[in-house]
Amino acid sequence: MSEIPPSTQEESDVGPEALAEALRAEHAAVYGYEHIGGAAEDEDRRERARDTAYNHKALRDALHAAAVARGLQPPPALTSYPLAEGRDADSVDSYAVGLEEATARAYLWLTASRDTDLRVTGARALQEATVRALKWGAALDALPGFDGAG
Image (cartoon, rainbow, N blue to C red; front, side):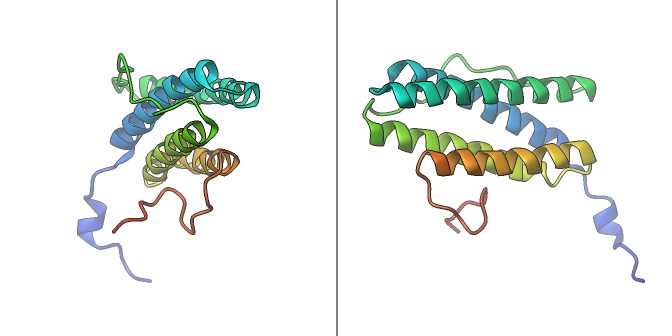
C-alpha cells in the first residue's frame, strides 16, 4: 500500500468555505424563486417557484444550522440579488436554470469537504439542483456543477 503524500495530509479543509458558499447560493435561490413566485406571467411557473422556494428555504436553514453547529459565522443574506430580465416563460425558465446551476456549483464544492456530513449534504443537494434545473428546461450536463467553460 502506498502512503498519502505529506502535502496532501496538510491541505486545509474546504468545508467551511464551501459551506459558506452553499449558504450564499441558497440565499440567492430563495430570493430569486420568491421573485418568480410573484412575477411570472403564468400560474404554473408561479406555483412551481413557490414550491421550489420552500425547498431552498429548507436547504438554507439546514446549512445555517450546520454552520452554527461547527462554530462558523453563517454569511447573511444580501439585501438584493440579480433578478430575471423579464416575466415571460423563457426569461423565467432561464433565470431559474441559472439559480440551480449556481447552487449546483456550490454544492459540488461542498462534496470536497473532509466532513462526511457536509459531503453527503453536498452530494444530495447537487443531485436535487440538477433535477430542478432539468425541470426548468436545462440540458443535462455530463458533469453537473462543473463550469462548462475552461
